[in-house]
Image (tube, rainbow, N blue to C red; front, top):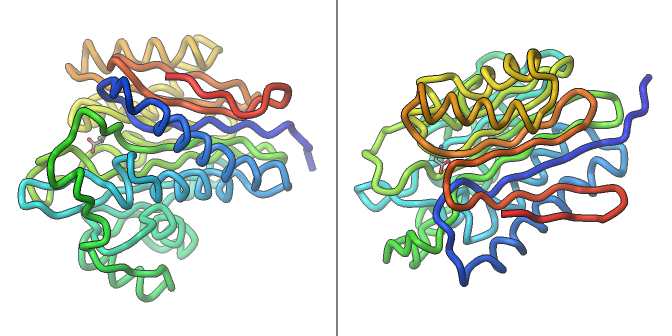
Length: 287
Ligand code: ASP
């Protein structure tokens, strides 16, 4: 069995620069990296690492995922999430779910159950009950600042990509979607290949931004194809972002880890909080 140095990078969504709100975002990103790194450093799997990182950020009220998700035009929360591991290419996802505190954990249970990849709405809630994922009152997920639509202080979606000691890569993405979206709209985040992808021989990717544009260019999987030809995850993220802007006709951002544990990220929006664990510097946060 290989013993590799683990790697982890997380994002808190591509969006506007909240200026005064940066410290809160920093704290949220640090919580995500800390939760994920704790698992990976203890020898946990990359799936455990990305799930823990995303759960921590779903709990943080400033991120558009879990508690604090943006609202639909009907004033409700409808969340999307997906998770994938890159050895068996196994994956799980949920879309349009409300009343679940941690959509990423529900996606993980769907992955483990193994029969289907994606559950939506009521069917996803039935899976949560069947698979033992705690439910909550949907009203608990609706925060006052979202009701008042203080979008300028809101970062986007959350995501994480990790490599574990065994050389397995996993990626996860969780979101409340886009503010004011029509009920029933599903974005890129729960779609494997669009918002999330992992393949241990290449790397893993989590995307954020204009979901319809990300879907148009199948951005996560596309990024790995680009990585295969350019070799370096930083460069690959930059090229993939150009594809999103030019071919997808939208904006956003993405994070990646390659099979060697090297990280990369890029965004076209004014801000995308990111954080990673650096063995010598500890947790590093960038915007
Ligand atoms: N990509 C997400 C969606 O379209 C939103 C975001 O990343 O902020 O649902």
